Image (cartoon, rainbow, N blue to C red; front, side, top):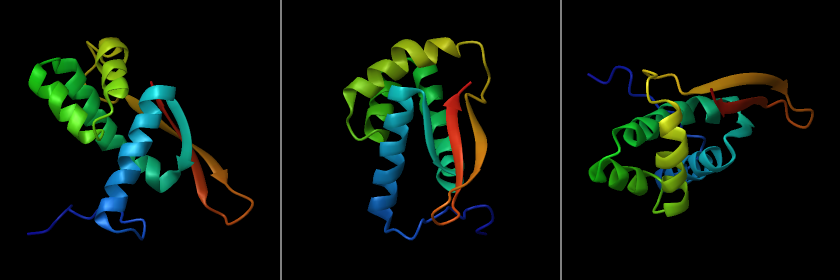
Length: 117
């Protein structure tokens, strides 16, 4: 059965969608708070929470998985493992928060902040 397998496609091919999520995740790790559309923020949340869980494990295998998910960006992986994962050592999930901001004046897209708690 295909229950609960629907992901947002954003009208893009798979490789572009993966590149978008990687880019958003890298930006969130480096800046710790970004502004994007509400749909992209909702799609990014499980992606980034899995990365933080890898960082909490701290093993070589989890570092390699995180590097692969972030497209080989070593600087983001270092920050993820050294500062962000340490911050959530005794927290069992829920590492990011999405705050809805409203709509844009240009085309009415719903904008939201996504930030680490």
